[in-house]
Length: 102
Image (cartoon, rainbow, N blue to C red; front, side, top):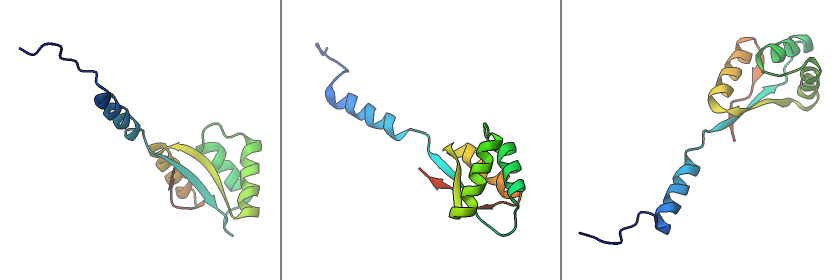
């Protein structure tokens, strides 16, 4: 019989902490690119309908940023949601950058 056995030694806790850090769910950025196809109104309507919480004012700001800077990040969060929003915006005809992992 082993006496004085303990399970909380420094090496065990550091291994558990590292394992916890690597299990974080990956995030991604959804980026819309400028094109000569879509109107401002179409971009605004798509952003408002697809990206949760996007107000009309914010959608117009993003549309102007896309037009003036060539692109804008329209959403960032969990990879699975980013994939969904990316696909939905793409299906609406918006020109999308590849998903960018954070």
